[in-house]
Amino acid sequence: MTRRAVRGRLLTFLRAPAGAGDEASYRYFEDGIIAVEDGRIGAIGRAADLSARCSDAAIDHYPDALILPGLIDTHIHFPQTQVIASYGAQLLEWLEKYTFVEERKYADAEFAARQAEFFLDELARNGTTTACCYGSVHPQAAEALFAAAQSRGAGIIAGAAIMDRNGPQPLLDGAKDAIAATRDLIRRWHGKGRQRYAVTPRFAVTSTDAQLAAAGALLAEFPGVYMQTHLAENDDEIATVRRLFPNDPNYTSVYQRAGLLGPRSLLGHCLHLDDAEVALLRDAGAVAVFCPTSNLFIGSGLFDHDRLARAGVRIALATDVGGGTSYSMLSTAAEAYKVMQLQGQNLSALAAFDLMTRGNAAALGLEREIGVLAPGAYADLVVLDGRATPAMAHRMAIVGGLEEELFVLMTVGDDRAVRQTYIKGEPALTHRPAPPIP
Ligand code: GUN
Ligand code: ZN
Image (cartoon, rainbow, N blue to C red; front, side, top):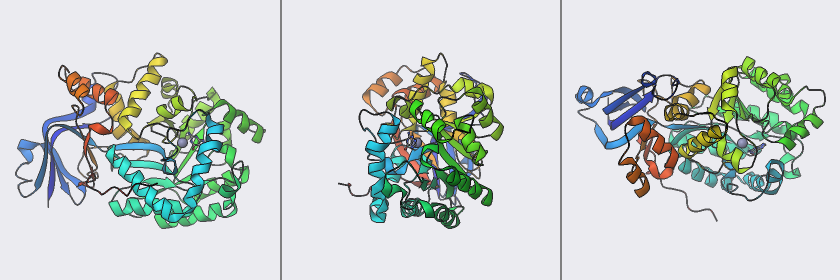
């Protein structure tokens, strides 16, 4: 039975747009309705055609807003909500000086549980309904994040970071039990409700060969589990990996040899890869995750989107908070556009919105479930208001069509443009935010 319906201007992508103007890549309803049934989309179509089916439903009507599938963030750090905006360091110093210091606090499960509420509130405020989340090394913190997501009906992909060297001792204390703890978390959370697990070796710098191999063995033991890590973000990081793994021809081969590369592998950054490494990613069907605000903020480099795309590497888009500077996938798309402009490349508004929704879902192999407005998919939605600020409304007054509207939304829009977010058909922005964390 349809108890709730959401009405407005609906937009959903059918495939990756070939470029600007590719109208066959999406479906658009000027006045459409999404009928929600048991948290999923029961039907979608023109309001005129579906009004009988929705006659008993409470209809949330947004006459001017654009309603899309909820946005998907494919790389974000749960323990870095208070690392965001940390001044003046490149990757390795930034990790030592800010990130590792902050992540130690997540040993405290109560602290982690409070932070999880803030984190999930913030995602919802930004219209993000699914995220791939790195945890701290503490299993209890990952547990708290999964439990918080589960209680909201939200699905996350997450994992406790594993590291056994080159970090502060308190983060390495649990190293000898990290694989067993990960196995336990997989059993507890992977496939429970909407939750999925990602085995999360932080990066090659902080794991021994033995730990990476053990992580790879876990992937073989639990098919369907994801893997997330960082790859080729920064020159000093790459030089360190070369020193630590002198027998490997390159950084990517360290992960490949450990059995960590496959279609469910998400490699953050991928900025400085040689051709052999690009071929390894392509052959594995692994996903290169473009994190533009982070790459600019930490000063790591420019993601060469077109080179990877031409080589046939799968690509996703992500915020990478707290190296990244915004939770907003709209702002992230704006920075992706600028990074590509700097290299003479182009990101059309259609390609950007596809990537934030269907494209990122496809990178996760979940495009039947999320990222699309289609019967059977979860009713995870974002309602976007292109006139959310005076400057946006002023610009929007002369907008000449849907694509231009989308481009304004991604270029100057952010959390202020998110009028509502739905998770499984329920408004998520009415959730009471957790009390401020001192
Ligand atoms: N490489 C290893 N850990 C991290 C992290 O937390 N953030 C970023 N941006 N890169 C990393
Ligand atoms: Zn990251």
